[in-house]
Length: 177
Ligand SMILES: C[S@@+](CC[C@H](N)C(=O)[O-])C[C@H]1O[C@@H](n2cnc3c(N)ncnc32)[C@H](O)[C@@H]1O
Image (tube, rainbow, N blue to C red):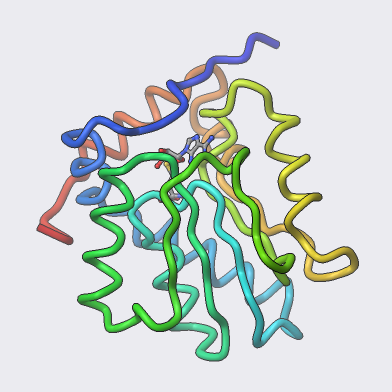
């Protein structure tokens, strides 16, 4: 099967803003609800979100699991800037930290209790780097990584993620700005 990849980082400021404004409430809340449903015993600890974008999923997860702290990693400076603003407005700066770096470069003082990621893999040149990072940064035997959306996108658009992204962008609202 031919792999159709998007550019790795969404580091164009207009693109990041359009993405942050798009309405992903159903998808992102669904991701968080399924995480909680699949891992009901997971109530507290450190969650790592790889390719966190504008931090909508970390915010939703922090609200759902008040004893968790979350670190989001994204290599796009404009995405991180938007995420930091939104986290501040949400009053969650004490529980959500963002790091502007490629996940391939992420080093943590301690391994995370859970690793989540949504809509990242189709950006990554070598998908093995993603799974290697999960193995490196997650505590062995802890909650398995929650990973979402590549299959959902695939179901809608089996051959081209760009179409899916266009769909999403056409639903831009004024959520953040
Ligand atoms: C489609 S967005 C998904 C954002 C978020 N997970 C969500 O579901 O709303 C993909 C994000 O992954 C980031 N990204 C892509 N490759 C990355 C890498 N190697 N390291 C860190 N972030 C990366 C992009 O900059 C972009 O913000």
